[in-house]
Image 1 (cartoon, rainbow, N blue to C red):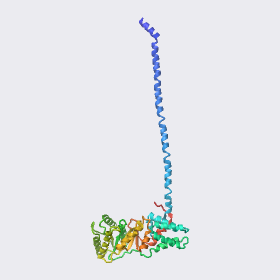
Image 2 (cartoon, rainbow, N blue to C red):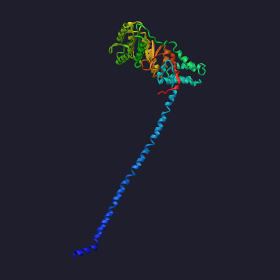
Image 3 (cartoon, rainbow, N blue to C red):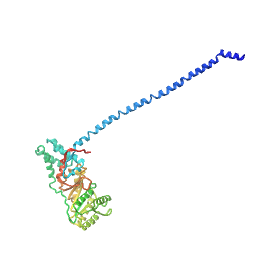
Image 4 (cartoon, rainbow, N blue to C red):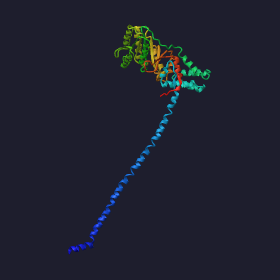
Amino acid sequence: MKNWFKKIGEKISGKKSRKISEKESVSKFKDPKPSLAKVKIPKMVDPKPSPAKVEIPKMVDPKPSPAKVEIPKMVDPKPSPAKVEIPKVKETKTNWFNKLGDNFKRTSLNIKNAIFAKKISLDDLLLLEEAFLMSDLGVSFTEELINDLKKKKIENGNLKNEVVKILESQFQQTNNNFVFKKNAYPQVVLFFGVNGSGKTTTLVKLANKAKSQGLKIKIIAADTFRAAAVEQLEEWSSRLKLDIFTGSQNEDPSSVVFKGHKEAIENNIDVLLIDTAGRLHNKSELMEELKKIVRTIQKNDAKAPHNKLLVLDSTIGQNTYSQLEAFDSSVGITGVIMTKLDSSSKGGSLIGISKKYKTPIHFIGVGEKSDDLIDFNAKDFINALIGNNFGDKSESIH
């Protein structure tokens, strides 16, 4: 009975149906949760990287594009006139002009543009005056030259001829030729100049010239206070197979010269070249030392030294005048060698040296090689100075 009543009670109370409904309700409640999770995670992640990929390149692209256009436009116009302005050199017998540096060529071209003008005017003469001053002909000589041109009635096209005539006349009173002499007991050539003028390398170049003429050469390294100078001479002498005499470190230069000169006489040397220490022309004790060297040479040969050569640096322009005056008053100068014309714009100072001091200019240096020492020729130099060696084609100057 109890079991029967229990079954009837369950039917009446509806417990079974409630359990089913709970299960159904639970399953219905649980189902929407995973579905929302599946949708929520991927949809929130996808849109974020997509705009980032688009935005970053768009911000970067426009910046380099104008820079690529602007930079070359600012640079291009500068070298283009240089390519037009500096013409190539005409082929000549002596093409040493090719070795001259860009600075020299630019000032030469300025002179050329002025004197080759189709119509001669006051403006042309002003341009010529400016070009001459840039080339370091000197203020007084330039004014003299321009005033002379103003007084003359120059027809179109003849300005160049007048300028050449005036410049050539400045060298007519000096004999610039340097002659090697055989059996001169020997021919003694003394080199001197300020520090950094290129004195030692110039001596080697001249020694090489003498050797090429079949002469017996000897070099004396009298710069005993600078070990590098002796080493430099020894290296060059070894390379060119030249005989060299050296003393000991810090030995009296006069003593080295005396012994080396005596040895040269005994060995029948044709040309003896003596390198001395670089010295400032305003240092009296160093100039006295140079005088002593000259006196020492004369103990072996009263007529020596036969050549006393001052080596000048062309890059300092008219400052060479004070050096020339000091060395000439101290030991006397027989000739000048002007170096570094391959890197100078002030070659015009050579004309001032010839005009003012009547000092022969024997050689010009146009490079570092052993054959870069050129016999000075006034006509060739003037043609180079006024740009007359330029052809019609152009070359780039950097």
